[in-house]
Amino acid sequence: MKIWVKMFDIIIIFAVAGLTFFAAYTAYIKPQGISQVLIRGDDREWVYPIDAEETIVVKGPIGDTIVQIHGNSAWIESSPCDNYTCVSVGSVSKQGEWAACLPNNVLLIIHGIDNEVDGISW
Image (cartoon, rainbow, N blue to C red; front, side, top):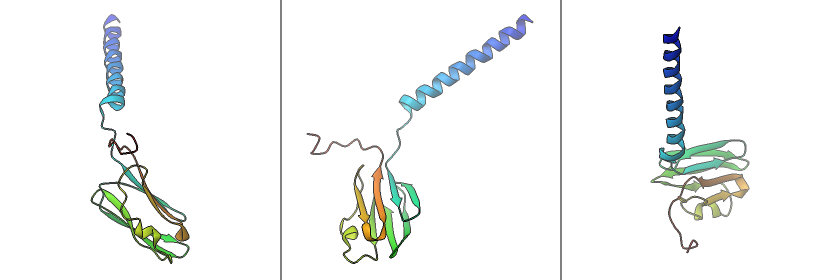
């Protein structure tokens, strides 16, 4: 019986050590990830990493809006709206930047980690 208790103790010690290492890895060592592109349409939502190479067709109430993700940035390539303000915004690539086609209910926003210091921080 004593051998079983000792074996069980060793298993518990390794399990606790493994869980401790895993918790420390996820909290401190693991890379925090890259920025993500969030695209919201009239009835759907898409999330892609900023380094993806994608063309997304977002259906809206007045037609299709085409969103491009390429070269670590995203932009609205075309939209059926009248004024094309969303297209003229150009590419967005930093956390918090966004573009929207309000007539077609499409939102493009960058979420994630941005370690760059901008002029406003100073």
